[in-house]
Image 1 (cartoon, rainbow, N blue to C red):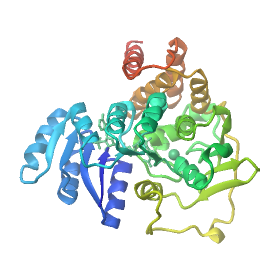
Image 2 (cartoon, rainbow, N blue to C red):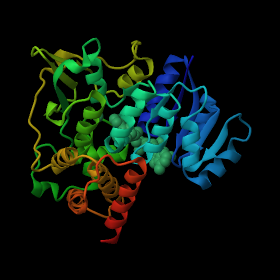
Image 3 (cartoon, rainbow, N blue to C red):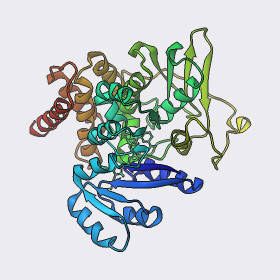
Length: 379
Ligand code: NDP
Ligand code: MG
């Protein structure tokens, strides 16, 4: 039995990972971690019987420990709890499904302990890819992509020399506001933003999809995962979200991975790689689909993508500033404290004041995050 742990088990990716585990019946879950949702975590503990459960919120962790006293699951708390979970002795693979760059330290800890990573938590790679990728090579661990586009690229490159591709064609749905101009974007509400046309996901990534910040993060994620230059990644809007991404090879051949939008496919592929399993669910019906369409992204209006490319080009600590400012702005937007277009202003002004540091250490990355947050708060 494969033994896994899940960071962020109560979220969208976390619960779908447990669904895949439940459907297959041959994976043992050794650890589960969440931010504060102990109601759901308790249910998961009773069903999957992990040896350890970690809760970020220390009060909630204490409450959970009381609630699950009758089980064999130990409860740990805070960042130390996450780190303990990341290095559980018998665990082979860690699914990183927390949201935000809070995932950096546990991810590094898991790689150091020799665990393979099924990576959903893209913010970690965007801010610390220069530390994570070499460390993974050194420890001989695999970083298996869960993000649907990156899983698609990974599947397309299966059997191909991964250095041999010319171009990555990263597809994007365009989000709920595709076709809008700036004037219309100025008026959108939180409710409009949370209605993604094709995917049901956590709130933060849903907002990121609407601003195209998500696609910007994914461009950087692709560069790290596939050792690609920024100029080798092209974003293609594919509004039906049927083509999950493509690669163009040396001889001009283009390989694509298609499917219905269902995150359980990339999750299951990462869990069982290189094997495939039956996955219940809808299949593509090309006659019902009738057409696939493509567009260029509008990066003048959706500045999230343009600013991400700029941050990636500067490199060093700039992607951390891009990401930290976005995380902070999205938290505010979700609390209705700022408007949609303010997200772009928050990122822009944070990047403008920052002097990028080359090759930042883990400590520097966390300091830059803190500094960006403090500055945004104090304006
Ligand atoms: P959700 O918001 O649905 O879930 C986030 C998870 O992280 C929850 O378990 C949450 O716990 C936990 N969490 C939140 N804050 C903290 C914290 N400070 N410390 C510890 N745990 C915390 O997010 P998603 O599942 O949508 O996304 C997770 C990651 O996967 C993101 O990086 C996202 O970009 C990526 N991803 C998601 C996709 C999707 O379809 N959802 C697709 C591709 C990538 P609690 O419930 O207790 O708050
Ligand atoms: Mg994606």
